[in-house]
Length: 338
Ligand code: ASP
Image (cartoon, rainbow, N blue to C red; front, side, top):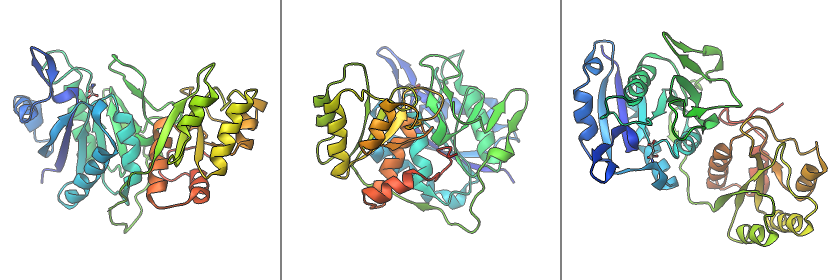
């Protein structure tokens, strides 16, 4: 029996058509292109159902509403398929790949998010390989996780980040080894794959609309700006800091703005702007001042994963103290706790 894969085509470069105004998504066009690729009907490939979303989006337009829609789409088709491929624009792919693992509770089948830098309609493209390998990963491998496959690397979704605007190796997970590498062989590292929880049913833990945000520090950032961002009704903030989690501790008003907000119950989670490594708020005075102001460590989480985790935790209805406690736990393989 041929395996079955459900393709959720949300938009992005991979399925776009060349027009006089530049590349544009068009419903039905991806199916047409896929029919003209003989490899896709080879006996070793799964049979597929393609669902073109309406509208097909450039992923720069994605919001948490679309993340929830994708999660429900997977849940509705869960029983009838061996695995799922989500075709997605690369720009915000890491955000969606970070959000889905929190929403898809009890996932026991592969969900592989992919896209491409050059559309399938072009002669030279990375779309064909990304699509074919993703379909094989979704149908032939026991990977009960949300993953991002791109340019030869299978990454844990909630560890992935976009590292190149125009290269084929556009994604990486600097703080976690790839779950698999694809060269001549498809090599999946079984030891790194999370185990499905036995007897668990898939349940969508929907994101409601908590008010969360992200702010990247820069030299000279004004405390007024920070205060404005932290104003009610904000519930949670990913603060993207320097190095091991440092900020301008000599700017008393900056520290005061953070202290006032955390005292009001705003959860501020500290993630480093560095691609690699972990936050350690005890290493420098510039970090411990943030900790004293009530900022919590995001350890080695990506900013994308921290934002998704805040969405998830506030959507569970947790108060600030519980959110802070849950941030200290590894819920979906998103953080390394030593
Ligand atoms: N702007 C496109 C998108 O994110 C880029 C891409 O797909 O690579 O939808």
